[in-house]
Amino acid sequence: MTTTAEAGAPVEAPPLPTGDHAIATSGLTKRFHGGQLAVADIDLMVPRGAVFGFLGPNGSGKTTTIRMLLGLVAPTAGSHELLGVPMPDGWATALPKVGSLIEGPAFHPHLSGEANLRRCDAADRTADARTSRQRIGSALERVGLTAAAGKRYKAYSLGMKQRLGIAAAMLGPRELLILDEPTNGLDPQGTREVRTLIREIAAEGTTVFVSSHLLAEIEQVCSHVAVMRAGRLVAQSSLEDLRAEAGTRIRVETPDTSAARGVLTGLGLADVRISDSEVSAELGELEPERVCAEMVGVGVAVRGLAVVRPSLEDVFVELTGEGFDVNG
Amino acid sequence: MSTAEIALAPAPARPARIRLRLFRSELGLTFQRRRNQALLVLLGAVPVMVGIALRLTSHQGNDGGPNLIDQVTGNGVFLSVGALFFLLPLILPLAVAVVSGDSIAGEASAGTLRYLLAVPAGRTRLLMVKYAASVTFCLAAVATIAATALITGVILFPVGPVTLLSGSTVSLAAGLGRLALVGLYVWACVATLVAIGLAISTVTDSPIAAITATAVLPVTSEVIDAVPQLSGVHPYLFTHWWFSYDDLLRAPILTDHITQGLLTFLAYTLIFGSVAWARFSTKDVTC
Image 1: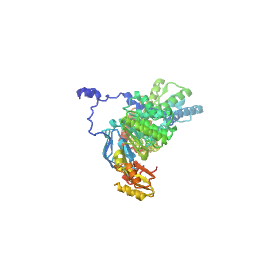
Image 2 (image 1 turned 30 degrees about the horizontal axis):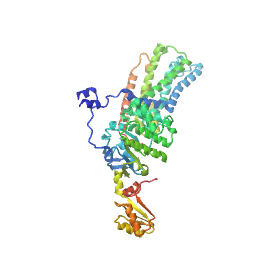
Image 3 (image 1 turned 180 degrees about the vertical axis):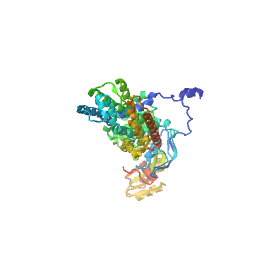
Image 4 (image 1 turned 90 degrees about the vertical axis):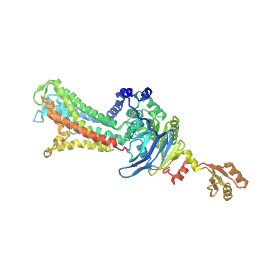
C-alpha cells in the first residue's frame, strides 16, 4: 500500500459486481423542463459482446436515452452503468472505452476529415499522442475515407460525413460502440458496408449498441433487440427468443382451400388461417414434408407450399400492436 | 496491494504534453478560423489608417486638438497608445466578444460539443481550455494593435525619447517598456470580457445571441459610466477602469487606479468564471 501511495498511482476501487453487461440501466427517466416525458422508467440490459439493436420510431426517446447513457443529459430519475462503471460519476473511467455516434455526425466544416479526427483525439486525455497519426489513419481506412482524408468536411457527401462519424467512434480501442442511426443518409451500398463493419467490430469482441428506426437495416446483424415506443421500452430480448416466440408457419397455395384447411386441422396444427387461394397454420414441431404428403394423399391440388419464418417486423407488430417502420 | 497490482495500475500523472493537446488544438481552431483572422487584420489596419490620417493632416498645425494627436505626431511611439485608445471602447471588445461568446455556444450549435464531451474531454477541462484560448486570442489582438501601430508610427513619425503624460522624459527603451505595460493592462481589461463571454456562451446554444450579449455589455457599462447621477456604481463597472492605463504613462506610475482596476477585473473573472462552470457542469447537452 505504502509503495502505491508513494508512487502516486491512483488507488482503484474494486470492480462492482455488475455481471457481464456493457450497459445496464435501472428506471432511467428523463423529463425535460417543459414537462415532456422523453424517456420513462427504462431498464436496458445490454450483455457484453452483443450486437444490440435499439429500435423505435423517430421521437420515441432513443436519442435521449443514448445522451443519458453518455452523460450528456442528466436523468431525472434512475441510474445506469457503462461497462460496469456507475455513470455519470464514472465518466472519466468509462467514456474513453466507449465510441459513439450521436444523432448524426458533427464536425468543423472548414477542417479536413483528418484534422477533425485529430481534434477528437486531442480532446481525449487518455489517448496517446504518439500513436495518434496511426490510429487516425487506420480509422479512416476502415471506413474507406483514406482518399478523402485531406478534403474539407463541408465538401463531404452525406455518406462520407456519416462514415467520418463512425471513424471518430473507432479512434481508440473500444469496449463499447454506441451508434445512433449509423445508416442514416447512406445509400444501400453504404448501408451494407456499415453492417459489415458492425459485424467485424463485434467479431473483435466489442459490444455494439446500434439504434435505428429501420428494423430491416440492422435486423441481420443484431443478436439482441429492444424496442422503444413513446419513451417506454416495450420489448427487450435476444433475437433467438423472439423468433422462437413467434413460431414458424406453413403456407399452402391451393384452390381447394376448405379441403386443405381440413388437412391442417386434422394434423392438429394451431391457428389455421384461410384466404382466397391460401391456407396457413403454425407449423410447430411438425415436419413440412408430412403436411405435403397428407395434402397430396387426400387429393388437395397443391400449387405451392412454403415454410414461413416470421420477419422480425412481424414479430414486433405482434409485440407492440403495430408496425414501427414509420417512414419506410 | 501486491506488486503485480501496482504494476497494473494506470500510469501515474500523465505528462503535461498530453494535457496541452486540447489547448493546442483549440488555439489552432481559433487562429485558423477565417473570421478571427479577419478580426485581427481589422484590428491591425486601424492603427495604420489612423497613422496615415494623422501624417496627412499634421502639416495643418495644431489648432487645440486632443493632446494625444500632438504626441503621436511628435513621437511615433505614441501611435500605439493612441490606437489602443481608439480601439478599446468598441472594436477590441467586439472582437473579444466574437471569440469568447462563440466558445461554447459555437460548438453547441455545430453539434461538436456533444462529441467533445462524449470523447470525453471533461466539462471543466473543456471550459478551462476554451477560456485559455480566448485569453490568448485577446493577447494576440492587443499585440497586433500595438505592433502594427508601432511599426506605422516608426515609419511615419519621428521617434525618440518619450515624453510622459506627467511631463518628464524617459529614454526610448523605457518608453517602449511603458508601452508594454499599457498593452498588458489592456489585455487584462479585455480578458475580463472573456470570462463574461464564456459564462453567456454556456447559457445559450446560439452563438449569435452569446456574441451579441457579450458585445453589448461593455458598451452598456460605458454608457452607465458616463452618467454622473450613477456615480455610486461607477467603481463597480469593469469598464470604469479600462482607461486607467494612462497612469502607467506617468513618472512615477500611479498605482491606485491600476490596482483597483486589476482587482475589479479579477472579481469579475472569478464571478463569471464560477457562473460558467456552475452552468456548464450541469448543462443538458441536447444539441
